[in-house]
Image (cartoon, rainbow, N blue to C red):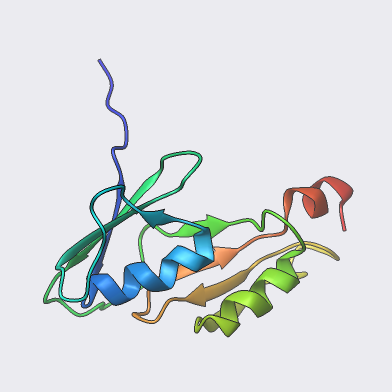
Length: 132
């Protein structure tokens, strides 16, 4: 017997605002027939092609330490550096820069969403395959 991941849950203070922030970053959408609205304490979004679900749920706790689980994101198009610029423009903050740490053309950038949840931007699959 095994289990599968139903969805990924992100604890936050404002479920609606954070779900709205992540939607354009990942290209996710509201669930059909269940739109997220201001004031909702739980907001779920999904990837329109894969169906992957993210649930944002309001909790009273403050984020205290580094995330134990985080997203590693690859740009679908363009480069890692282009994606970092785009995501910073959406309001992310840069936490760490690991570009080139393991040689030219390697590494990632650690960013945080508006509530401090950290995630990484990796090189695109094309960049990784080319070694650039």
